[in-house]
Length: 460
Image (cartoon, rainbow, N blue to C red; front, side, top):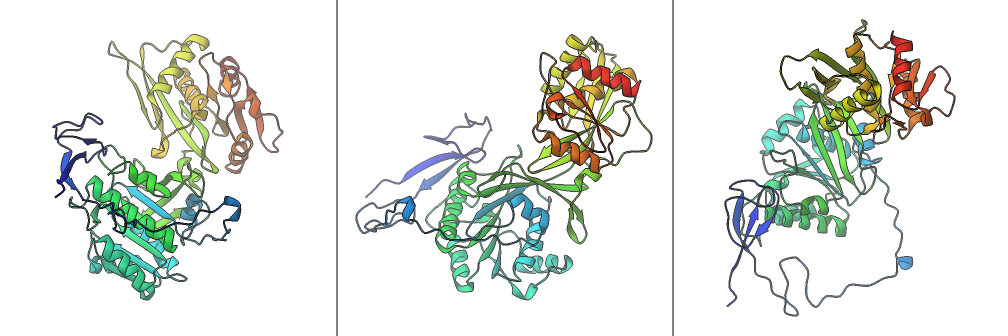
């Protein structure tokens, strides 16, 4: 008789160990290592393994040139901004993972989407966290269309879920959530790394062989990472994260993996009593400024996926009362803030060593690209000089350690978006000012000194 094997896996990062220990040496989390039994597998010819493959069966090997090209047109999720993040719609047979904080609106967004999809495709909503009565109440509150065409079931067994999919001939299935799903051949508890991995693998195999689309809801841990093993991210075709801005007024949907589209796209929603409302012009949200000019405020443009996004950056310089002045930023990398301050001191002659410096990105947006460096630097300089930057001026560009200003990608599109939002002057890297733009005065700068001189001409 074969000896039962046991494994010890960290529920935070998915690392496995030969024996139990109090702290995970991979992620440094305490008391997260759990024990589970590895299911026995048979590898003899003619017997099946737990992975679902069958010994003795054969698969056909083909040349790439001989593979038949099947046209698989995308279908709409019913939400235009969601389609844009997906890359133009949903690809049939794909497996998408939607994760986010509790209460971010994952179930609400998907319930609105399935109502639109059900008009043309057979749709099934599988819930492992709520009862069918709770789902029905929310759907009626959101005025979800095509309720008579949406099938719903409360189930946690993957095998039973797949049976329901076959019986209902479902083409679009929502799994809410993967942490509640279990497979029969695993003895571990629901939500454990092995159950999450095996459940996702079983759903993916079914999706690829039967052409059924699965949208899976996933939880996140305390570090805002996807809960469960790393294999979960590798298995799915797309990973999308839904989060809220710092003021909780808006929701941001970002993609970090997409096999069928851009992997850096984002869109915005407003959470209302009637559900998620699309925000088709997010630049107008983050540029809701007062009519009065204030020192330390500069507007810049970011590139989010396939479109520009205009945001306002605020800075405040204040005399420090402590021996170690504070350097605090919200939405902007603190290391790049320290670099900008050092460049401003070394190459601009502006000494800020005795001042507290605070930087804030209005609207709760998080800047993950370097094109906002020049705007951050000029906003700090504006606060230091107590000289407001005119509201019709937009700034973007990357700052190097030798004070040179490097170009940003998609510069022409950024300038065009600025013109649409009413900006008449833009301070940009010299490499981004090679073309003439009608209606906009382009002020090219090559280094920090030229940027400060341009600031003094327009602000002082």
